[in-house]
Image (tube, rainbow, N blue to C red; front, side, top):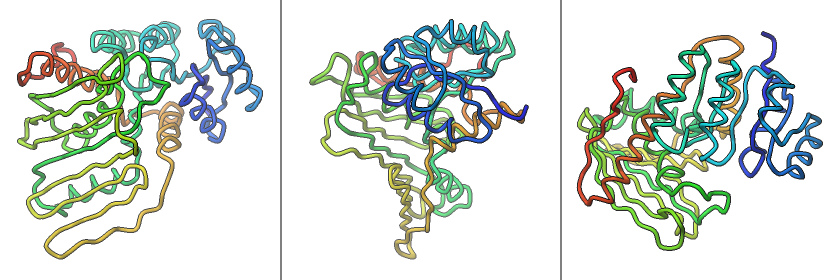
Amino acid sequence: MDKVSICVVGVGFWGRNHVRVFSELREVELKAVCDIDSVRAKEIAEKYNVAWYTDYKEMIKNERPDAISICTPTVTHAEIALYAIHKGVHALVEKPMASSSSEALRIIKEARAKGVKVMVGFIERFNPAVDRAKKMLAEGEIGELVLISARRVSRWPQRIGDVGVVKDLAIHDIDMVRYLTQSEPISIYAVIGKLRHTYEDHANMLMKLSNGVVSFIEANWLTPRKVRILRLTGSEGMITVDYITQEITVENDRGLFKPNMRWEEPLKLELRHFAETLRCGGNFRVTAIDGYKALVIAEAALRSSLEGIPTRINYGDGEIS
């Protein structure tokens, strides 16, 4: 196909960024937007000269897109994704993939049955600094990887109301750990609590991976300043990645240096990959299985905190690999 026709469901804070980027991609025909807020839907549609709806089912029926991008509240992800799959429409589902791992598993099985592709929106996989750090790891820049630590903190975003900090924030770094190590976490110990919100708003998690690497993740909605930092500690040095600025710092016995990096918008790289993969064929860099496994780990962290003990991570379904 020359272009991929795409509709966006949910045009709030993050969804409108999807609309903006899709409108800029030459490989995409942005057909319509949908939001339960008719004023918001109409405003965005008029800005980008596309059709608008308040009912995603009506939009899919009328517009017949190749794919949809789901940027709605988490509790609606599974319902919308399953409907799209039933209609043969591919989907990009923002993280977390669903409210629960059981919902995510159902999406995977339905997509396989219908031959529909599903990608999950783990945007950090498309951060150029992460790609550079991953390459450095593979080249042995810091020797053997020992520890991955991540700090993802900021004030509570009012757009979030149906999940806590583990499934909204920490899930990014849960996925990063799997991606960078190509290894699965086997156990997790978490201390999680809430001070100001309905759901948990601070979490500290320690994970052990099957390859022996240890990971520590800190996430909260309490810190005044937004911080997004990843540190990779190896036997011969350390790599620090600032997700926001895309700056990399390498420290080893030769000193400290910062490789030159050209900043690129991760969302544009992510959405271009989604469209190009649908247009040309091939596999997504982030699959529905990645979304499912991240949710399983997040749920294990919540159980660990509730029980006050380390928890084994079990993906459960023999069909998932």
